[in-house]
Image 1 (cartoon, rainbow, N blue to C red):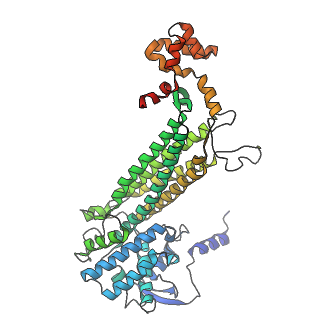
Image 2 (cartoon, rainbow, N blue to C red):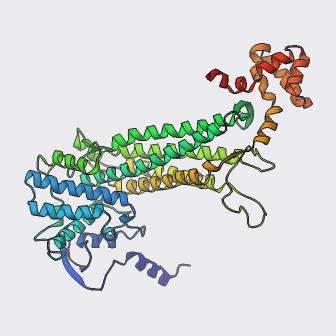
Image 3 (cartoon, helix red, strand yellow):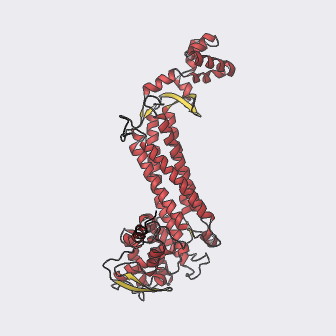
Length: 487
């Protein structure tokens, strides 16, 4: 049964606004007057957002890449507005100084609105407008809240709207996060490649549908892992290119209303200079303001990457299963005791953790897909939850990839004795003899060898279809694994 007092205590714990020393200043918006903590850099709009959206208990400050991206957007906007004459130079300089501090990591505790919010990101945009305005005022020697001098809307948000600044800042932040994931993916692919080289020449049984198939080398198996991951790194390049198309200057719905005619191009140039990215303005700002296709594409790319990683981890768990009654072909680094009751048990905990991250990423993609579909007319109001999903998935995937490389892949060892034993008795090598004896005789002899437990070479020789010398020359490791075809 619910405890009303406990419920109320919990509600207050997540709804209470930061109050500093208890002193307040009065601020006013279109809904009326409201007190704000005197030492807060945010203002009345954020204060209302804190009351309205006490949902996740997590502030937007957890997404440092979004904070950085938004500070870049506001700094570029200030420069552009000063350039086109829409903002006084002294105001632009103070705003830019405040943005530089935020980009460098200052004032992170002032970005307090909940990551789950209605309004298509307006609360986030106003959080930046108010923090930047008040820090700019402070840098100019004025009091916080003295908006007659520098105003969050008229000055910091000049020529802008949430609907063009939020997605632009989001794209900058996502680009940064995706770059980090790509770096880690390259390192993981390289680690698999190194293992592939280390395991070259170690013959094993390849399997399809968990049944014995044809010979291969352990090196080939690990090289395949490396190539599969390297392909994802190339795919990320396309997504990053998509993230470089922005709608800054579109303002509310893409018509550029309330913005200087030259603002958009000037802001893009300054933003490109600040970020180092080859940004381009969308050719149709109305379409760009309502379209969230690039976020869907990124989410899909992350899910695809996660599923590949999960499949590889499934393989690692299978190949290392045992150590006595499983495949036992490789040994994963022992990371921790595997049981509180079974002595000596060690579990494949690192691949298991990566599997679970993949499940989360797949679920996040479903959330983002639903949010994308729910957009209406000239704006999708659900970009905040897309931002949440994408940043979380990028963070989880990046950490999982690093963990898999550092704590698992680089320490994988081949169980050579086990592999040699299974390879010597492998009936499936008869597949290599089909061009010389035919499919039906090969199938008959394979069945006989399995039934009798005999050596397949002896069975073939006894059939009189090939001599022992012929069989031996056809069943070399190079021929069986296809390595001979590579040279």
